[in-house]
Length: 125
Image 1 (cartoon, rainbow, N blue to C red):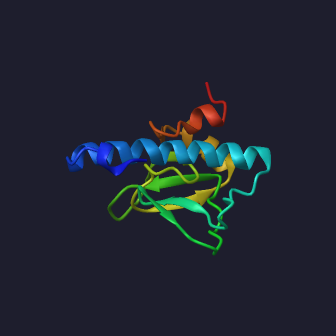
Image 2 (cartoon, one colour; image 1 turned 90 degrees about the vertical axis):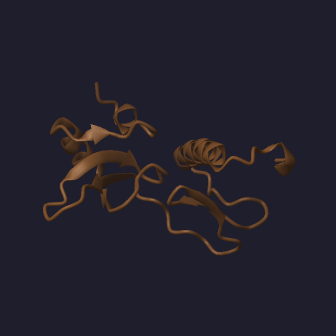
């Protein structure tokens, strides 16, 4: 991407960053479904961490869990959202969960992420 074409406004840059992270998450999900390794020809993985895209070079990143619960703040730390693993919108405290646990959380009223739409991936009506 030509950096001269990017806006200088940090707010607009964050929007572009979020879009690209979501696209990267979708590509990774497709690679996982197709059995691809996700390693580029240059020998490194590209991954999203905390909404930022980083390259790990030659080291391999630990694979993201398939599903995660985002926990709220406070003493009880109740689940507030269900995310697909690797979703850049999953911020703060997250815990990996099984498919069954993710389905139970959605059935119990925990909101699905607006960005990665785990309810669609889990085929919940």
